[in-house]
Image (tube, rainbow, N blue to C red; front, top):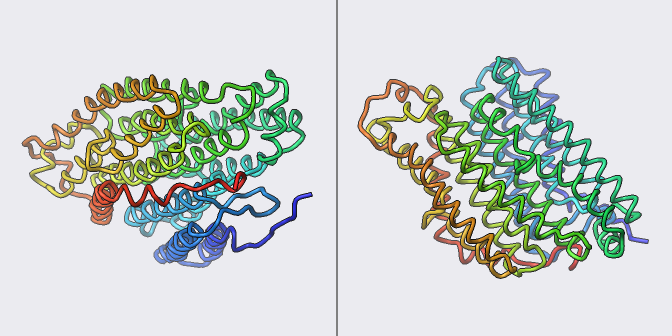
Length: 474
């Protein structure tokens, strides 16, 4: 029987975030409306402290906590840093628009809970804990999508909730089937049991489980909610929905493939490769002629998750898969948040044509937009370029050269719709929707663009620290 390790320090970042959310609920009940911004302070402190704790844990050997239900290894540590860093950026993006809002404290609490759910998914090594993380990441996000209580926000929240609830039920059904097949919900034991299990039961359980995890990742065929939810929600919430849950879901998928399904009779690599192909291709095709900038970024994020799934497809088949996924996830997070920061900085500019003349009126913001959009394409020396290069190499190394070639073709094709946004921004014009804006969001856009370039330049040293055994196999 496995010894129960219940050391709370192993999950210190999660404990800090949960404690900050509870404190925020208490403070929000007593603070006057104009001082609810104070709730954001413990959230920021918890995020910074969690990042430092994760960095310290990253230098230690991989361990498991709470009866091997939660893993603390390179995947968990990197996901913690990326998710908590993204949470801090979303906090900063929302501070200006939400100042003196009657439900400002509620927003900060919901944001922390959604981030906490993503953290739980990233470190979960038990199907029941994965389901708990899914629910914790989903329910606050449904509320945030409709936070403005207007028509588009309500529609976004409703579509997001209905699809999430349906796929969540399928996920729980899949977990039930896998538990009945392998007689365990813990990954190490379940992985060994599924090697000799009936293929039909393994396939049915895995597909049900994938339904929920792919929903959080925003991948095809669980992507239908992404465009409407992103377009209907506020820009800070859209930035959250397209970034933080994806990191937790992708980490969970990689762990499932490497620990649980790598030795099963199910063709896991081929299944994920097909999902990756569909995501990158359909996301690109749908983004080609979009005019709304948030909707364009929504389809962009669907295509990006296709590239991010490439290392997941070769988990256990290539030694480069883990570092490729972790670096690419960090690069995507900061670059995508930078693009949304530009959208937040210009709340009146909703379509591509509204950005005409941006370079003349706000040259630094235009430069940040160009860096982030070309970064999403994978243009050197940005971080996504290094991430894509590693992902392509991992796919070749894992025996999926055709997937890497198809991803390269999609990358070239994606340049078209990013340029459709960049060209008006660099053209002459006097757009009347570019005058007012959020100064804080402009600062976040500059910072994210700088980090994207800095991370790309320092790609070699960063990649070197992302490798290491998972807790289950260590």
